[in-house]
Image (cartoon, rainbow, N blue to C red; front, side, top):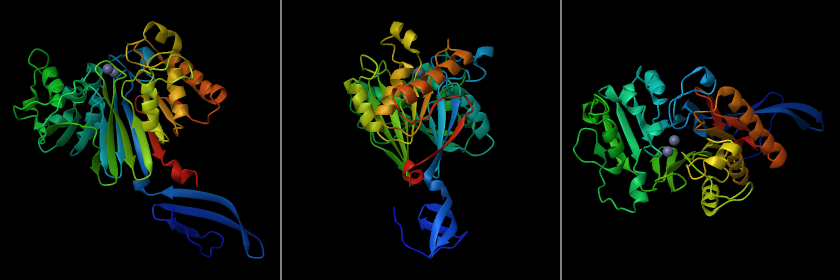
Length: 356
Ligand SMILES: [Zn+2]
Ligand SMILES: [Zn+2]
């Protein structure tokens, strides 16, 4: 951080970082010395991100009176930075997002963790896909890495061309004539599909770094989103590989290294500890193990998502409290833990700035 000495007096507004505006309220005490009574920090758009959860349920859409609070739509979230809108997964929550975006022109990047239904079933109902002039760049193709295959094609496939890559194939099957009345090539928007190779996608100040992990059947991409000094990580579906509370397997250690110090972590915590005992190997985490990983990685805040379809709102309220208590009283970490709710919007600031 760049800083320099300047003369200040009570009520002065001082700019001393090229991205941050600091406002200090001073009180003169003696001999030209001042006591800082209060300070406020405002960061320019380049330093903050906004996360919005459009779908927080795992496995299958789960409408009903027991899911009103946390939501019944499946995985979809957006991250807004100074460089635009980034969409992560296209579960049924994408329908709601599409209804918001259809009012204007859409030009967005879409990052798919994997193509299980609960992560792509909102795509055919995403209205911006049908509007000519809209541009969607869809990234994914985790199976290419899972299968150890190379891909020498450099240009992405489009929804209009006959070529197919790993990213496009899941969407193509989903809109096959036995399953949906509108084929992919009949959608009016310009949609491109690109297989990722763990290289970051960079746009202005924002980079999206995919990272492949095999902590779910067939593997998938998690994503690390960075915008100047602010970092957010999304694991997609993830099952820890540590054997017991407080221990970490090699895959957990790899993840902890990737997400170390992020300002916000969005992670799959589908099961409570008891449920997990009967669902080992299903590809989703025990909520307390998610807390262990977040604490070990020293993240700024933790958002647990991909809630089990059988977990109603009252149960999730209790599990959120359980995680908050575990984080503060057992792990002795001051890390806020929230269970993601559909429609929840969170502003994420870099701790580099907040912790001056
Ligand atoms: Zn899932
Ligand atoms: Zn899955």
